[in-house]
Structure formats: C-alpha cells, structure tokens
Image 1: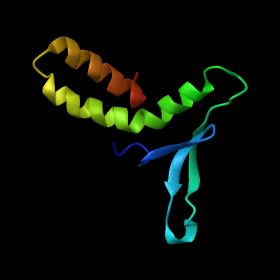
Image 2: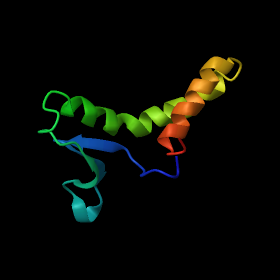
Image 3: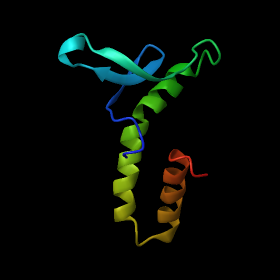
Image 4: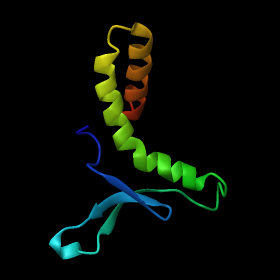
Length: 90
C-alpha cells in the first residue's frame, strides 16, 4: 500500500489521520488525512468517518484475500475492481 498514507489511521471527532507519537509530540498530535463534516450528514457522519479510518486495514485484507480466492474468477474480479477503485484507477 505504498501509494497511501501509512497508518494506522485514527479517528478523533470528525477528523481522520495518523497520530504522531514521536518524542516531540508525546500527546499524539493528529496529522490530518480527511475530515467528515458532521453537519452535512448529521446521522451518517460518524459511520462515514469510521469507514474512512478503517480503509487502510480493509485494503490490506483485500490484498491478502485475493490470493486465497484466485481460483474463483467471480470473487477475484470483484476484489480487483474494489482495489482499483481505492487506487483511483476507475
């Protein structure tokens, strides 16, 4: 997943980012990757933020899973399309 911001990604409020826990940031400053406007989709913003924060982990699972389902073209095709979408190729 070298094209993406290395994680793990964390969710703080409506901001998603990587927590910098280096010696200079002992309290874990959040390096912001994305934000979800909690006022636009009042009932959905938390679910959307959780989904975005989980994206790197889900991508990694799909990359590993495709090796397991390579004998089934149906699932292999679906996973390949999802990964391509995540990479911005579609």
